[in-house]
Length: 431
Image (cartoon, rainbow, N blue to C red; front, side, top):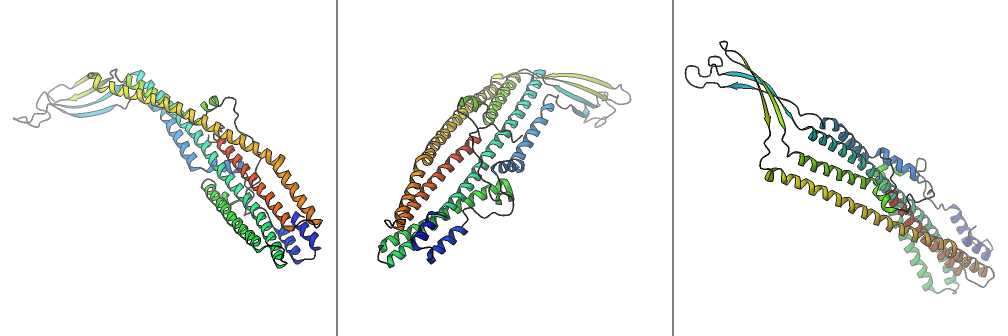
C-alpha cells in the first residue's frame, strides 16, 4: 500500500468513496508501457540486429570485396594491343588503290605490348592493398558508428518510457491532491487559489507526459530505420552498464580506433600515390611485332619495333603532379592528427559527464532520496496523529517523485554517455 492509500484510508476510516477510487486506481495502474507483440528487445539484441541487417554495413562490405579483388590485376601488365591496316597504298597512276601491284604496298597485322617498370607495377599492387585495408577499417568504423546510434536511440526510448511512467505516478498524486483540496474548499479549510494551483500543476504534468511520449515515439521511429519491425517490440530492462574504455592512455587507445586507422591507411595511400608519381618520371617501354603481306610477286615481311617514352619537359608535366601528390600525403597526415585530437577531446568530455552524473547519482542515493522519504514519513505520521494536513503528505510525496524524476534524468544522461563511448570501444561487429 502506498503512502497516499494509507493516509486516506487512515484518516477516512477506509470507507470513504475517495479511498476506494485511490486504491483501485493505484492497484490497476501499470508503470510501464503495454507490451506489443513479441518478446522484449534487449540492448544487445538491438545492436546485433542492426549490424546484421544494416544496408550501410552491407554496402561497406561490398566496398571491401571490390577493393580486395582489385589487388591482383594492379600488378599485371596492361593488355596487349592488336593493330592492322594497309601501308603504302598508291592513290594515283595505273596502280592506284591496288593492294598487290606495288611492291611497297603491305597489308599489315601485329601486336603491341607496353612494359611499365616492375617498380611501378609493385607500387600499384601496394596501392591496391592499402586501399583494401582502408575500406576494411572504414567497415569497422561504420559498424562502431552504427552501434553508437542504435544504442543512443534504444536508450532514449527506454528512458522516455520510464519518465512517462513516472509522470503518470505524479499525475495520480496531483489528482489525489486535487480531490483532497476540493474537499477542503467545500469545508472552508483550503483557499480556492490552492486548488487552482494544483489544477495548473496537473495540466503541466499532462503536457510533460505528452512530451515524453513524443520522445519515445521519435526514438522508436529512429530504431525502425535499423531494426525494422523489431523496433516495435517492448524494451527489456536496462542491463548493468560498464564503461567500454578506460582513461589510462586515451591517445594510444584512440590511435587504434577504426576511424583513425582508416585515416592512417589514407596516409599510406597518399604516400604510395606520391611514390607512383615520382616513379612515373622514369620512362616505360613497349614492344611491337608485325606481319606484312605484299602482292604475289613479292615476299612477305615481318617487323619488330621497340618504343621508349621520352621524359622531356619534366618541370611542366611530371614535377607538378609529384608535388600535388606529396601535398595530398601531407594533407592526409594532418587530417589524421586532427581526428586523433578531436576523438581524444570527445572521450575526455563525455568521461567528465559520466563522472559528474555518477557523483550526483550517489548524492541522490545517499542523501536526497532518503531525506525525501523521511519527509514523507514525517508528514504521514503528523497526519495520522491529527497534527497535519493531507496536503502536506501529498506535497511531500510529489517532491519525492520530482527527485526520482531528476534521478532518472541523470541516469539517462549517464547511459547516453555510455552510448557515445561505445563508438570508441573498437568493436569488430562489422566484420
